[in-house]
Length: 128
Image (cartoon, rainbow, N blue to C red; front, top):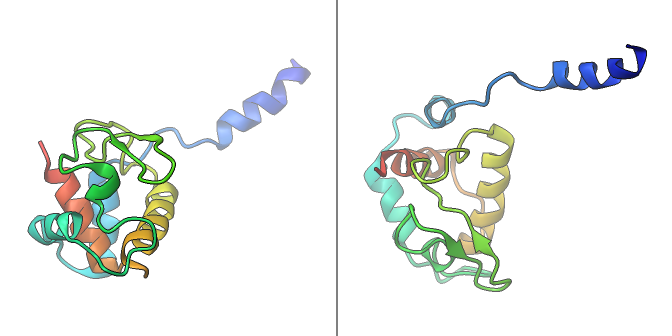
């Protein structure tokens, strides 16, 4: 039994349930104010002249958030963005923040605002 205690402690430290995309959105809205799926779609489809790696989200993620994409430099497959197609999207706050930080910097050459994050998340949740 003693040899299983570290394993039990590890499982006890893990969250019992991931957050939902709506909970992630609610947290973003608390920071930014009301979210707009329409503005989020505009951000997703907008072309940027400042991009470091890509000139739009759609460069890697395709025009269809339910479809897998491919990174423009590494050519690695990217899972779909929409939670309806990829169940674990927008369920881990740390991952959401990590990917916003990385992708906003790569496409916009700056950090996304709290409003842009809320709008983008609202759009992705709205995709059916």
